Image 1 (cartoon, one colour):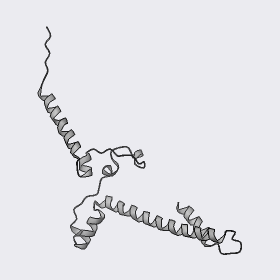
Image 2 (cartoon, rainbow, N blue to C red):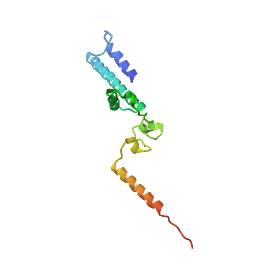
Image 3 (cartoon, rainbow, N blue to C red):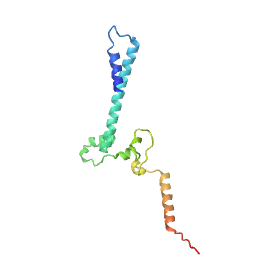
Length: 141
C-alpha cells in the first residue's frame, strides 16, 4: 500500500519534463488522489495508534482527555485491557476476520446485560435448582 502510494506520487508529481507522456488532466487527478491517499493513511495510522494506546493503558480517549484537563493522569488506576476481551477466546487465526468474537463472560466484557439475557440466565438457574433438588430413585424387584 505504501509502496504503491509512493510510486504513484513519484511518477505523477515529478512528471514535469517533456518526456512525460501523461495528459495534464491525468496528472492533476493523480496528484489529488495521492494527496487524499496520504491524508487517509495518516488518519488511519493515528486511529490505530489511539486504539493501541487505549488497549495498552486501559484508558479511553475521553477519559484520558478528562484526566489531563483535571491534572489527575498520575492517579489513574486502570489496567491494560486483555486481548481476550478484545478478540474473544477463539484461536489466533480468527483475529483478522470480521466475525463475532466469543467471550468467556459476555456481560463483564460489554459492561452491561440485556433483559433477555438476564431472564434466560434466571430461568437456567431455576431449572438447575429444581433438577438438583429432586432425586429420582429406581427400585428393582
